[in-house]
Structures are given as structure tokens and as C-alpha cells.
Image (cartoon, rainbow, N blue to C red; front, top):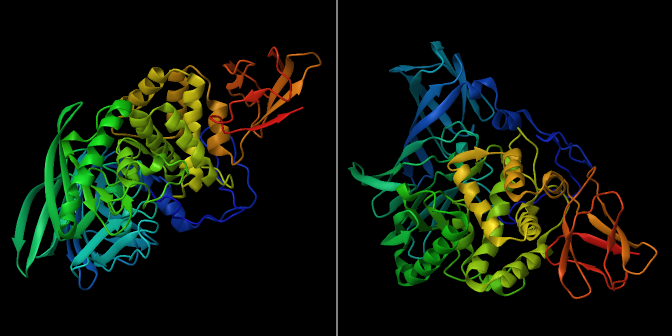
Length: 555
């Protein structure tokens, strides 16, 4: 989640072929560098090995904003190789790479590191190497909108430090194969920090270790697959509160780490967390990470969906820092960061896009999860009003899908426009239990998996019974919206209707109101077709533009 945090260049269209074979329209050619390709493309030097497990083991020198330590890569050989690539930003030093007790030669190009092994590793074997590194990581100036370390102090003057790296990449602070397609099955995160503060990371705290020099190391064990950008550290003078939630899969441990000065506000977080989990388990199925628990960790930055350790910085207020982007008032009845970032546990952390180009999968569904939270507690009309209100934040300047293989996401419209898309599909289906089954089924089918555009499109088409290929192409891969053209057919109550769209052979079901105000589903295409609406004229006939994000012209 980086809501409205990145500035996008107006007039530029993202350039890339898509997996459906439809080229995105371009106003100008955006230039991508070798560094972008090294990071975004899955070359043989990256696909030759599959990461199974990491052990990240570091020390954080807060006074000097310096980190040092190691990361062990445990992997399976996919294709025979003697050379591979891992990633680490070039402002950090690779001190050595150790394999079977000996140092390996390596070279660097931009933020990519190329390691050569003394012999070929054979397909199917499992092995490991360890990278030792150190340096001053990039400092985020406006976390979480930009990435890196957020070095702050609390009101008492104690260190308050966090990482937030979505988009920029986890390799900004630790060595890994920095591509969303390769999630490890689990990992250990060991972080040594000065006495007087503690570190909170993903998973469960399994051990603390007193070290020399007034440091304590905190060992956090992650038992579920996790994506690199979700791995986080949070350092502060925290008070810890714990409770157990009776969820769909049984007992779920809930942990809250808040600054000691805010311990008296814990009931606000507890209420919001439990309400959120109840609504989302209803709509999406069981929380995906029971083994690792659910945590809210207070941060100086606004928030991030760090798996099982959600960063929270909304200052104990309902809304989005006290506001409601929809303008409807429905967004002021709940804490936006708790709801939105928790929604990412299902869409983003459970179901993860293989390529950053498809980050719209994370953000569109999670934006829509806000509406479903409202639906659960305040009803469907309130939910749809919220989605409709969010339209005012849509710019329609670039597609919500980015270009593949260069580590670039699409437009910030992926939030609100993406939420609108899902509300339209729900409206087309017009069966809320079926819609709920689709959302729950998606989280079950793609449980702990990485997916792409085609996976989501195929699943939703098959389970909705509606061919959504052109709908997705229009709303995900294009910047514009279609226009429904309604013309008088020459006799009372008779109309010809078609879609005007830049998408070839566009078709999408849409509801039209009859003279009694009842909605009727029609299925226009880009070719004129005749429809009867007794008692209606071109002045009175209306389409459901409240739930369908479309243009309409009548004549």
C-alpha cells in the first residue's frame, strides 16, 4: 500500500506487451534502464534456482544508521548452473559470499550481484550459500511512499525505526532474489538492536539473546511463504498486548506492539482488528497465516501490509488520518489503515502478483475490501455509495497495469478504479452469495501462491459465468472507460444500443432501468443491437451509472 504516494508523469503511458497479447496504447515511450531489467526480468541466472528458506541475521547500529550481518540462501536447483544472480543495492557492501566454508568470486552490476560457483550444481539438488554484507541503507524521506529505513524517534527521544520497501524492493536493505515470483517457504529473521528498545518482525518471536556491547537479538520465525518486500523490522520502545481471537480456523493469536506512551489507546486497536478479521473471514475465508499469528505494530510512517506484522501509523483515528476520501462519511466509521492493510493479508500476501506490473491485483481487491467491510457492518447500499464516492480520485491518465519485466507498477488508479471494477463485476453477477463464493474460492485456489493477470481473469470468468476478457482489457490495460451509446430506433420504446470503446470487439453486460425503475441486464457489444423498453424515451431511459463506471450518450 502506497496510496497516492507516488507521483506519476502525466502524459506517459506504460509500454509493454501484455500476457493477453494486446499492446497498451502509448503517448510517449518510457525509457527503462539496464538496472530496471536486471531487477525486473527473470533471466536464467535467476530462474536456475528456487529459494526455499532465508536466515537473515543482522545488527542495527542506530546511532550510525548502519547495518551489518548476513543472509543464508537455502535453495533448490531448478536448472543446472554454476553462476547465479542475487540482488543488493549497490550502496551496500557485499563483504563476502561463502559456500561450503570458502569464499566465492562475485561481480556487481548496478544492484545485481553475480556469483560464480567452483563447479556446476545439478538439477534437483538442494544447497545453500551465505552473503555477508554491511553499510548505510537508503534512508526513506517520506515512508512508506518512498522506500528504505525510516529512522525516527518517539516523543521521549527513544529510537523508533522501521523498514518499508514496497516497489523499491527488499534488496534496498538485505540481500535476496528480489523478484515477487519467488517466495520462500519460510524464514528466520534475527535482528540485534541496542538495549532499551526491541525489534518486532514477521512471524513469531521464538528467542531473545543477550549480546555483548549492550545489544539484544530478537529471533522471529516465519512458518508461511512470504514475499521479500513484506519482510520488515520495527524497532521501538514497545508495550506488548496479546489476546486470542476465535476465527474460522480456530484460535488466532493477536499481538499489538504500541509505543509505551500509547498503551492507553490499545482498546481502539483491539476493537478495529477484531471487527476487521470478522468481516474479512466472512468475505474472503480464513485469515491466511494462522501459524504466524496477526500483529499490529505501531510505526512513525502511515502503514504497510507487512505479512503477520502490519505496520500501523494512523494515530488511533477513524478514517484515513481522520478523513474520508470517498466524501460519503462511510469511511469515517472505521480505521482505514487497520482495514486496508489487513485486507492485504488476503490480497497481496496470500495471493501475490508474480510481477510488479500486476500490483493492481493487490490494490484493487484491497481497495474493494474496504467497501466489503462497510457492507458487512452497514449494508450493501453504504458499500456501493463508498465505491461510487471513491471515483473522484480516479485520473484515467495511464492504465492500472504496468509493463512487465522492468519492476514497474501501473497507475495509482489501481486503488479506486480497481475497486470500481470489482463492484461492477459484482453488479453484473447480481448474486451476492455467488460473489462471496468467488472471493473465498480465489483465496483457497491461490492459497499462498503467486499469480498474474491471466490467472485472475481466467478464475473470475470461469466462476462468474461471464466472459470478462474485454472488461479486464478495458479497465486494467487501458486508461479510458467505455461509453454506452443509446439511440432512438424510430418507434416508441425501441432503442439501438452499443458500446463505444478503444478495445476491439468490446462487450460488457450492463443494467438499464425500465419505466418502473427496475434494473434489466442487457449485453451490448460494439455493434448496434435493438432493445425494447416500453414507456421510455431517450430523455428518460437511464443506465446504472451509479455502479457501472461508464460514459453514456443518448440521442
